[in-house]
Length: 179
Image 1: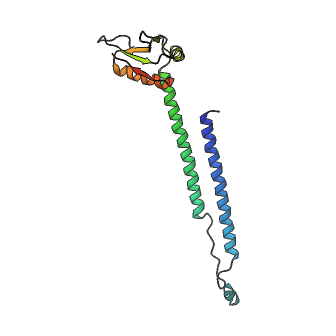
Image 2: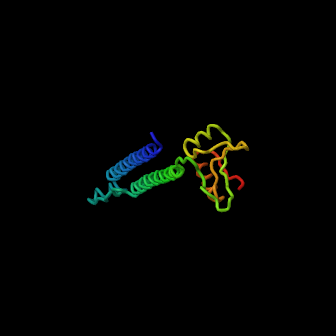
Image 3: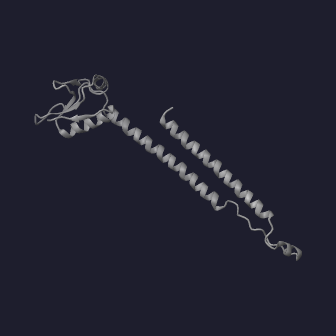
């Protein structure tokens, strides 16, 4: 079961619980109305003997309490849906970062007008190197300094963006080396 299924289940269960509470409050309101209707008003024995009756005061149907519960129910369901929407957007942005990085046989700039190159570097970890080579950049390697070099870019800005994307995708730290 995915986290999305869990989120929808949580929202559904919250809605069911709120409905149950609303029904219980409405039942309490009906019970109070019945009690108030059967009670006589103060001094009713005098009124009854004179032939006059004072009407019982009772809560109207759909009291403000059930309105408040309904408002809270709507608020909880709305908040739950908002959270699910935000999580979907977050998941979509993370997967789009990975999609941007799809596998390439060779990563980086094709040429540099200045002749200067900015390398994207990571730790020299064999497992991470295999992940990067298999999923992102087929020409990644461990350079002579003992550091994983994934790509080189013509500008520092391009290298920084790529390093950030690769860091998010692999959950490992990549950085821009000296140009």
